[in-house]
Amino acid sequence: MTSSNRRSFLLRSSAAMAAAPLAACAGSTPPATTTPAPTSTSSSTPAAAPPERPLAIGRAGSAPLDPPGQKLGVGGTQLGSVFQATSDETAYGMLEAAWEAGVRYFDTSPWYGLGLSERRLGNFLDDKDPSEYLLSTKVGRVLYPDADAGQIGIWMDENHFGHRYDYTAEGVRKSIEDSLQRLGVPKIDIVLIHDLAPSNTDLDDYEAQLRVAMDGAMPELTRLREEGLIRGWGMGVNDIEPALAAMENADPDVILQACQYSLMEHEDALQRLFPVCREKEVGVIVGAPLGAGYLAGTEHWLYGETVPAAIAQRRERLNAVAARHSVDLRTASLQFTTAPDVVFATIPGARNADQVRKNRASMDVAIPEAFWSDLRAEGLMHADAPTPA
Ligand SMILES: NC(=O)c1ccc[n+]([C@@H]2O[C@H](COP(=O)([O-])OP(=O)(O)OC[C@H]3O[C@@H](n4cnc5c(N)ncnc54)[C@H](OP(=O)(O)O)[C@@H]3O)[C@@H](O)[C@H]2O)c1
Image 1 (tube, rainbow, N blue to C red):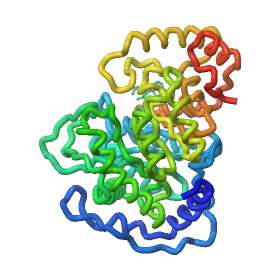
Image 2: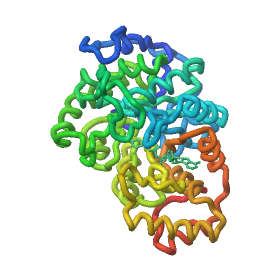
Image 3: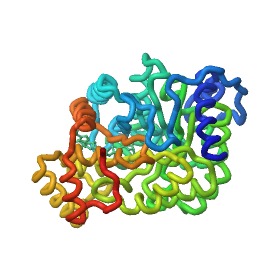
Image 4: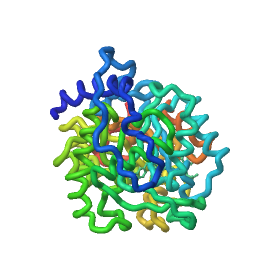
């Protein structure tokens, strides 16, 4: 599909989605059973009227977010109790505050808290008009019941599910079906192939899994899009290579690129990823814009156990420049990730209501040009990195 076709297709598919029976994808299979997912879905006639809020993920510089142009969504790892157990009250408080502040894009995954993030997000969205929000979730891990699973990895709640990787077409259908049931909402807008990346040490044989996805998950997601059951698909990865591979070998609409574009580290994405996204009109969603918290002042740098000395030193230098200009480093970090034309959204995770309100407020702060030019002059920002207008 060419870029201009993709644009008009997205308009059609989002209209079709409003009319299409997503139940065909949701099916009636209980989560994590061995019942096969449907391999075909009912056809749908695209509705004639264009959607009120077209999905513009392939269109550089525009976004279907509210207020328009703000490019701010919210991540879903905290809803899954990443790094610390997060109570229902805190999680729902964060979501309420996000909604009140006008945030309308929510990202989640089956992996985040082994279903917990999707369950909480779905409960929250239950009484919301589906046309008012944008929702992405992920495929690649299928959950199955495991009463004794306990605490797994960075997900700090007790949980009752295990997971297996599955990047096949059938795995994608099964995962989407399970997600729809956990979420309990009538649609998923964007589906991202999750953690198919060389840095994912939990994954056996990245190259082999990539081939599975190229034969299975990727063409299947294109089919689901063409059937009008999702609005777009892409990769949700921490490395650049799989994003490039998907754009070279398949037809994604969007790349959720985590860990590669922040004020701390951005050269590689700027030079190798963004030009390809621009050429193919693939939108970028920036994951971990705060480096998993480090640029907001926490001691978590991405998802490792320790903070590398070079990163700690760089934060000190960034903080020194920020202090000189009375700029808040978290605010600058968030705005920085929204500046490139290819970026469709940045999705900082927020632990609670206070954090999400502050992140929303950060988008309205005027940052002096002298701050950015000092960062450039001190070699703390790439010369070609765009800065907010
Ligand atoms: N492979 C993938 O697809 C992938 C990978 C990574 C991320 N993602 C997506 O990107 C989203 C964002 O990544 P992330 O949540 O891991 O990292 P992040 O957005 O870089 O950082 C989130 C953390 O920053 C701190 N924070 C946020 N707002 C704050 C505020 N106003 N004041 C003080 N601290 C604040 C909080 O730390 P504390 O909780 O410690 O207070 C919060 O948990 C994820 O939720 C997920 O949706 C996707």
